[in-house]
Image 1: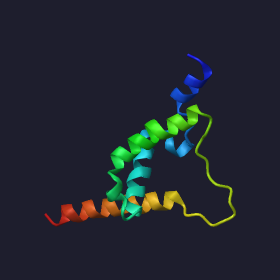
Image 2: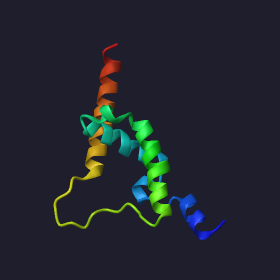
Image 3: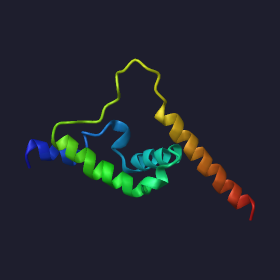
Length: 100
């Protein structure tokens, strides 16, 4: 296997927070929940598969990688969004169980 193929297979072209499948799922579910019209563009599973397994892989194959912007603006913290989404899902599930 050549160096490029090994690198692509390793997943090292992805940011650390996206190298684990379960972490990727959290990002895509949170993104889908945060963007209010996201359902108009498909579901989080299909978006996840296309973006990670197709788009980012192809871009990396051509020498591009996803990286955080260095622009001097105050960005939102993705982990805050992920934690909020998980908390909302846990609260909704707990409420559903307690209502039975």
